[in-house]
Image (cartoon, rainbow, N blue to C red; front, side):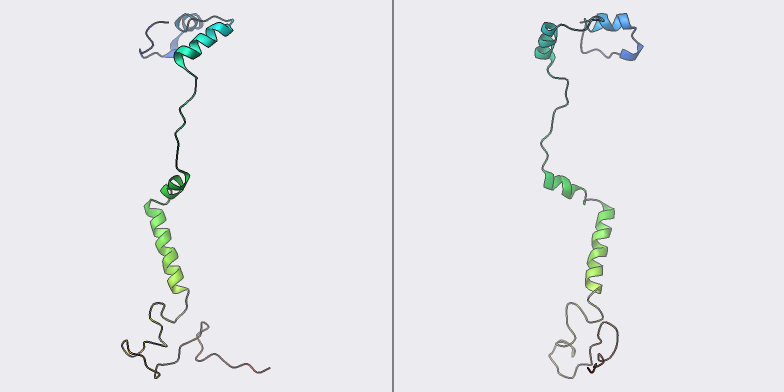
Length: 120
């Protein structure tokens, strides 16, 4: 073949020009020719890259939309604990950080003060 490094528009070649360029014919290559070309040019395959699957998975989370979704999940977790404060429970710190037994009643998740007593 001619210079392998030149830019070539294969689509514009006629069939005869392509056979000449690639040094073949309508009959194809013999086994010996195929073996020689395999040794000279290597396999017709893309190289495989070794990828860390964990890092590849985590890379999907590195974008602004994922950050917003993660923040929304954190807010949902904090808010889902109901009306009682999450970090500083009202039953222990209701007088400016000191323990007091004079705290107002804590509403139950349904919002009733205090929860009703059910008799059997």
